[in-house]
Image (cartoon, rainbow, N blue to C red):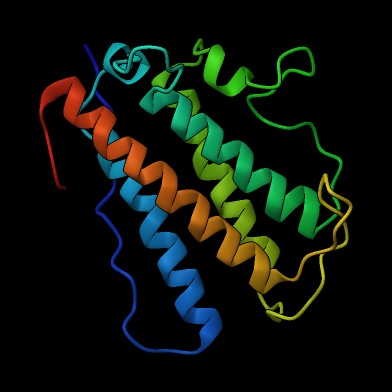
Length: 172
């Protein structure tokens, strides 16, 4: 039975420009999510150990791939590419349908992260997004970075609890 092997967890920088620090902290949060999945099988990643919740570690990774694509590709760049792990008939598809393999899930996540990095390469934090969000607002790259840090922070907390419920592992 194969297990997911996470890359070495990235540490955030302690100095640099604002843009470098934001990128560094975002990368550290991305790798924290992956670290929470390390050593688990697909079946373990699909578990929903919290009663009345559809959350699973696999769902979290799928959700964050979609969130990466939404904010950096769709909103910041204005792309209309088909969204990953989504289905117009189910707004929570990334959580509800866990049919993807280990390889597919993490490959899609990594592609979305790389595309996000490419989207902001050589861009200023004050640059406005091309697309507007669901509330009709236009956001700056700085706002998107901060929002993504908030999103990962909340979901990494969920990942901590899910991992502990799955096999008792805490920390990294």
